[in-house]
Length: 622
Image (cartoon, rainbow, N blue to C red):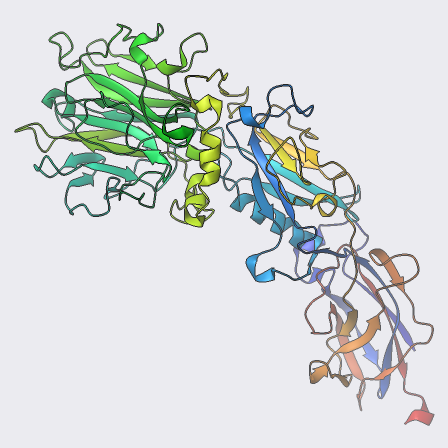
């Protein structure tokens, strides 16, 4: 008789050998330094077994929904500002279940659940500097063994990315109407050119490949340099701007949100028309203009956003303060201004002109709470959080095929970004596909988007260079962070609070960490079997309809624990014939744990111990 002790590692909490697949807690091999002899006609039984069971989390529609939010941290008293109506952000619904799991109770091990949480939050993160960055991991105790909850790591990228991440050749597409002719414009080697001399063709295009960084991002376009850009010196109308990607036509056949109207400022003298959230233009009277799409509660029943002029010339901080639009064609200005640049700082969009004669950037406008809100751009908000370059060129007589050149574009290099697909682009783009842009409209009807009543202090950058916002998780329905209908995932995520807005670490930085308040309840609903894989025992798994190497069934429940460290020793060992007519020379033991379907029981972790008892089959049984 022989007792053989097998284990995947020396002690619990050791992770050194877990990186090797032959030492997994659910499948491992123990080689011998010298050959062991098993007698002929031998039998084997499981003497005892010790395992660590992570357990499984169970969720369904009763505990699968929560929200996350990136914006102003709201005051929980419900009255002191900021409240949700003061915010430029909106709670983002997240569910643990997928569409294929509707109506089901889903079971997952804690590692798989952490991956699911990470996947679902990433898919509903729309701020470009936070997309594809969130991490969720399993928290364990000091010996790195027992599950104690989850770690939620919200990360934002404070880099302005690569300023030369400019759109690829042919990266622009029509942004006026779907029914326009082909060949109106071209884009090659960063040069955008109007190709048509038909004045009725609208040359307006957008590049959707990557979104603009909102942390010190720069979008610089040459409008005059003698070689690659001539729109300003030619005197034609031009527009340079940044916009959300509108992928569907409105009721009149234009690319603009279905709650937008073309213009309220009829006195803006433009021949070219297209939607832009933020724009600088030379009008058909050679004047420098700025405009954006904002809300006006006094028009259209307060139910629309519309083009409104930004009266930068009344901003005392502007280099172009004169009480009227700057004349780009005046004799002392001709040829001086060669570039227009957009520069981001959180919610603030600053725009400047480059004076080639003085080699200086000159401010057109930026947020300043000491100035009138009609003199600078609206705050960058969640409806236009993913911004893309938009270019537009008009024609004027012989000057019909003019050019401009993109010098810099801080496009974030996101691997999975696609502005035309659900959850791959911005918030507006996703809701447009889903037919739910009423939420975007609701956001854009707030006071900060109406300069008649706007008094918002724009959120700029924090000390770490990221957007000065707060990450918040909402795990049960809230009257503060609203709408958060049906939020019910507090317990499964491990929180005893409905609003998680105080980080365990990283406050004020770009790496905010929340941790579960308690260990979420786990269940143990799948039976586990021990297998001895390199011997000849004759076992049938009737459920699967095949032969098996199963040695013993481990009961998953006792009167104390169903997860954690479990020890099993049968009251009476069940011996199984090895069917060996001759002695066996053994140089290793191959142990694994499986479910009834023979799949590995990957719910195990840490140290597994299996004690095997070998004996020669008793004569009376031969």
